[in-house]
Length: 286
Image 1 (cartoon, rainbow, N blue to C red):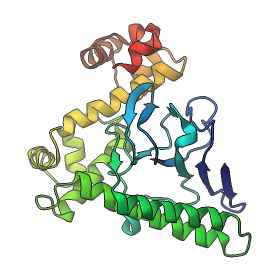
Image 2 (image 1 turned 90 degrees about the vertical axis):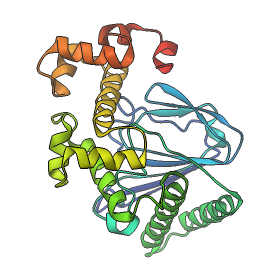
Image 3 (image 1 turned 135 degrees about the vertical axis):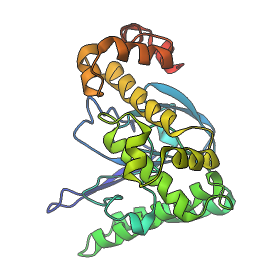
Image 4 (image 1 turned 120 degrees about the vertical axis):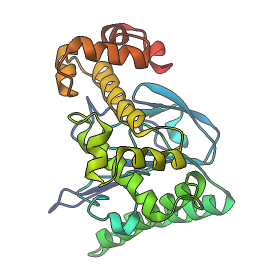
């Protein structure tokens, strides 16, 4: 089942998938014009999910959130319940004060698998049923009702993610928001800005202060997160496009192709050309 709402005046779109055998995304090819954010729920048995060419375990009774520019597929898409929306329907950046998910819930590097307890599973099932019922009602407030439901879904998923992944006692909201803003800045600027000092300056913090804050949140440093974001994009471009290594070098903000190749090989164990020519299974194992 695939249900879709489209707002003619804004081109806003909201979709829900359930028991759908062909649910997947290939951002650089068939889906390049559809910039959907995705919330996917696996209410059934554990299965594989492939994100940007790399395979992960999608645990039973868990959620994963995916950015609009990510490609993904499921081992068994019929077992997945998913919501998709574009920024024209609901812009999570413009409405960050409502849902507080930008830079945390949706990420290109750390894929957040959110485990659900019995209460959360029941709430999601009820919410899914209300979504489906509302899609069937065609009246002049349908768009408003579905928007309210989407906000509730995003807020609830953000709450679940924070409860499971953020050390709340050590990390007050103010600090947590700095981390979210850093992630958002990286997403917007990683192709041109590779230094921690740039992002620290944007946040009115010193690089050391920023690094100390991230040490509280997790083991990765700001520098590692910037480098991971660059590598993710490099892998996507090599995996899904025919762009030359030279073109990719300059697109990702490197002035020297040899330097980019060394950077990529240090992180991936393969040169960009070898990665592109390697078997699919080899890429997914990286």
